[in-house]
Length: 222
Image 1: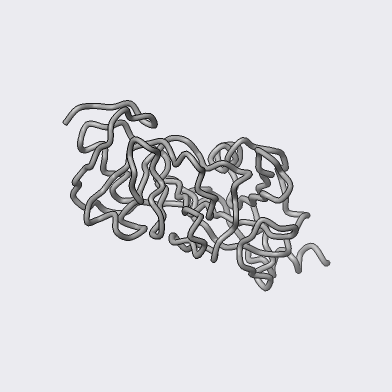
Image 2: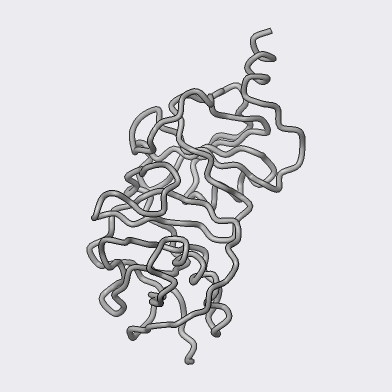
């Protein structure tokens, strides 16, 4: 099988891959499908007819001579590959466009809007925890802008909790992290690109004791 440079491929390609074991993935949300489609390696097999299969197959392309990729993009309702490679599952190193974020049902890998695709960051120590409407601001240790969620994760790699905010951030995201829990667990909401809607991720390899939200709140109020 010939080698190609990802994310741009010259010709359409259909790859038949064997299943592989799932690793830690982070759901990043639903994003508007660009008019020109998504550039990358479009993978098509019986394993990509469902969302987790798309992520698994994007991870497995290294077994067939391709360079590893960071992201798996999937839509069950529309083909999302660019004009050279139409398909429902695209493996790419290009992050989703931040300004195209539309929220989602909260961790789902299928987007309810037919014009959206789901983006998943592959092989990361972070997992998506949920979206919330209220934060414990006093736990924040870092607050800045980042070019992507992955870039935020790099900035916050020594912290247990990360918050991503897309609302009115333009081409970037607001990136905040803390050693203790950030979100009020009683304020779960559906993810959306609106004010007071915060995406929370947990770093599963960060060290240190992480008290519960109520414990942090109790300590702060005393």
